Length: 199
Length: 123
Image (cartoon, rainbow over the protein chains, first blue to last red):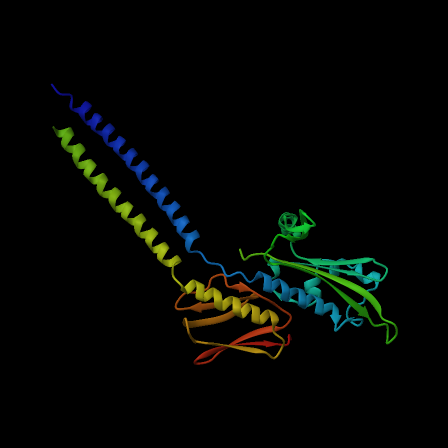
């Protein structure tokens, strides 16, 4: 006598096993598909990088904010110590220069050295990305040239190249501050700009 | 015999479901690949970045013309919002745009056959 209930129970157990296997197979197929999707996204993705140009343009705008020609603008940018200690100015140089837009990607630092070599530092933005710059900057390549010295040949280091950092610009300018038509006071202005990639 | 028949029917059903779902995944994959390999995204990027560099370096009073009949496609929309510029090309809408910076105000005007981006003094 066949136990029908046992048969049904056995069938159900078998079906459940097949379902479990099917779920596992589908999960595997989905996993492989997503991997392939990810690889194809990487292969076909294309990002036009203009960060170098943006960094140069932003540096120019910031420097023009402080300097007119080769003179520090005395009307707008008074270098009195009391103003430089104004925290609003110290950490919002872009706002102070009335540069508008979506500024989250930019980091700007301006250092003005006066004739007494005192530094006045202005900055704005996320400086955290600078540690990446520091990592890349520390990697230098050295150009070695073989020179003949009589009958001896030796290798001589002629120059070293810093690693390329996209979106980074730094430059030092020498400027004069007009003292009401009198003798000019020399300043150095150092500007550093880092433009991050769009998220 | 009954349990064998039942099992066979269940296996067939499962295979069908499996094939359908596999086909669905393959279709999704192909659609994503086609979208990624579409050149409209590159055209959009080129236009947005060109305009951003122009705006970044512009002085007040300057204006830039973008013809709707662009050589690589049809430019459907150009607008600025929140310090970002958005360009729609060949039905591809720009969701992120590209950010720019400027000391001046930027206005986009639409004409029949072109968009004109004007850089004006603030205020």
